[in-house]
Image (tube, rainbow, N blue to C red):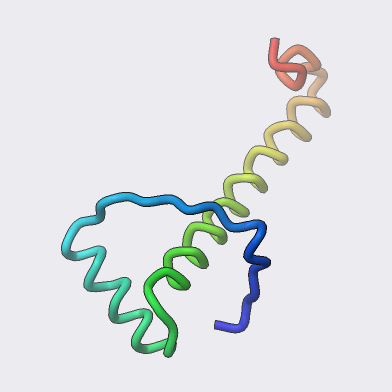
Length: 74
């Protein structure tokens, strides 16, 4: 994985995963010559960017459709 993260920007998050998830993470890490934490970080980061993109799209559409209260959170 060629993506770099600044250490100061990383936050420690812990959770439990299913055995199947753990096996896939381990396989992806081995295939990519990285560790599971890198795989998890990449997957979550890409998911977060997609969610931010969706939220921005909703804001743009509601603003364009004349729904300022929805954009303002009212």
